Image (cartoon, rainbow, N blue to C red; front, top):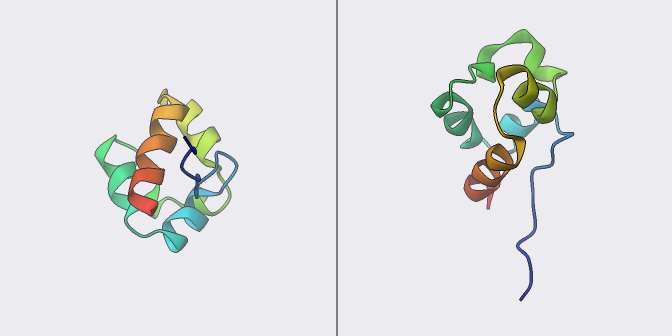
Length: 69
């Protein structure tokens, strides 16, 4: 069985992710990451933000990739 491709990777900037996949903004907001309007969103990676907010990175990536497909 083939694994689904991950469109979103942990080293992508949050701003880049939201720009490319607008529905991901809802995911960030739903888990309390208000990175959508944050000035750091252009530089901060998904991994950095997850670590800083104490959020499981793999779970976050799964949710982001689910809405990006």
